Image 1 (tube, helix red, strand yellow):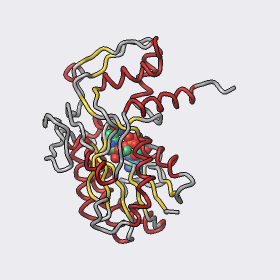
Image 2 (spheres, helix red, strand yellow):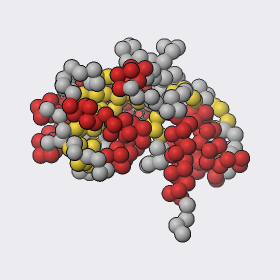
Image 3 (cartoon, protein in one colour):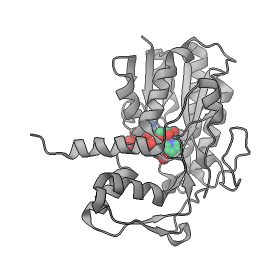
Image 4 (cartoon, helix red, strand yellow):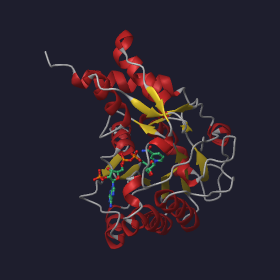
Length: 297
Ligand SMILES: NC(=O)c1ccc[n+]([C@@H]2O[C@H](COP(=O)([O-])OP(=O)(O)OC[C@H]3O[C@@H](n4cnc5c(N)ncnc54)[C@H](OP(=O)(O)O)[C@@H]3O)[C@@H](O)[C@H]2O)c1
């Protein structure tokens, strides 16, 4: 069994990783309380004590708006920590899997983004994630960076849950309709990492499985489209119509790309991984939420 350390294990991706790896790997799970990614010494100590073969960095400073005024914390977690994890991975002969974001792009390309396209983050969060992926890739040749987008799951405070709650309360739903992307199930990211773990652990530096890849479920939509699909799956014929609004109508501290859709053909070619449609993944999430909410018999 592979010895795998998961950081940020209570987040959307971290939680799904723990679920996927349970019984299939020797898992060392670290949440913010047991490994603060803002503490460089703590990261080094943890890795030297635990000596994992696979490090999966699911922890991140993901509060996109808050990051605009909390620069140091966002940079420590999103930029410095992946670099340190990668340095230690190299020292110990381990593999690092790290996650980055479509927010490294400005969204103005007019076509899906390839891994080699020029980056131009619009926010502190995007810039800190871009530094993090660069630091990780520079420090350890056995690093896999998965840039992903619009992560959805049944865990934590999340978009799917929020839309269902508002719809059930009967409150009007008004959601941004001019930002487009590819929703991605945290469960699918976790399933991919689980499936590839043996291959990654056996691959030498320089193997094609390392480097930068885009990972997303198939299909593009707007946030309104995602919200509409969520309430239709969750409420069936009672689903309300989600009204479209423009980004400009809902100002926020951080700017977001309007269309930073990720092209995943490199991942599909190198790993032979075919992303499933986001609606299929969303259906599972809504079903899981319904099951969790159902009164126990
Ligand atoms: N969510 C998205 O739409 C999205 C889109 C593109 C890329 N990504 C990337 O995908 C990865 C996983 O994101 P996610 O959706 O799973 O995010 P998430 O649900 O916000 O989880 C992030 C986890 O990191 C933890 N964390 C924050 N600061 C920390 C620190 N100083 N030390 C240790 N842990 C810390 C959080 O803990 P607390 O709960 O205690 O804060 C949380 O459990 C991240 O790299 C993210 O940048 C996400």
